[in-house]
Length: 218
Image (cartoon, rainbow, N blue to C red; front, side):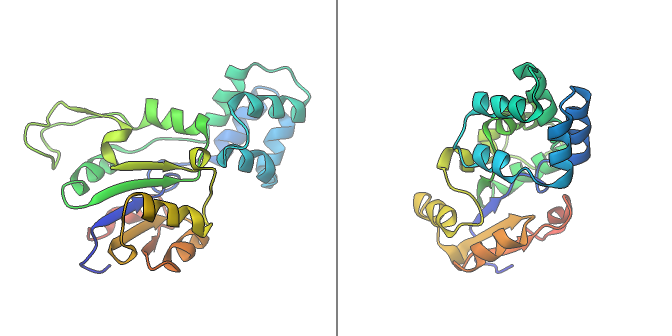
């Protein structure tokens, strides 16, 4: 990583929040929607998930599609619960690191995600109460951080109607936040996403395991 970095862009899944596909599969089985569980297991859910991530359908339409696929009348709340079982947690050490990085860099989030998963992250997983051990601005002990306070701006695919690894989504982030590519560092778990960012001059790090980026000298 070059020393001229001023901006860091984080991916969400498998970088900040943990993902557990087996737990999600088991959850859909638990609520009796075996067809969806099997689709997830086979990795053949692209159309269903793509439409939620790019904002082509809203949450209600997603629930309807799941019911149609499974030929069930399962309540929205149960489907939401099963779908959100994909998300595990955001460890406190990562929240602490984001807080510290904000003292030195402009920090952003860029995620392929959907409204349901984002609300779960924002409401349940990102909040953090700072303590005296945090590397933080003076007087921040006891402050409760929300998702918006870790990042200068949050870019979500379903709101942008764009999705990684398209070049357009990266160009939009650079232009909207007035970032110089050569001064920007992007952390993502997908090689294709990193390759797309790198083609625009952004420095990248492919995060193969969820905690790998914590060892970077940032």
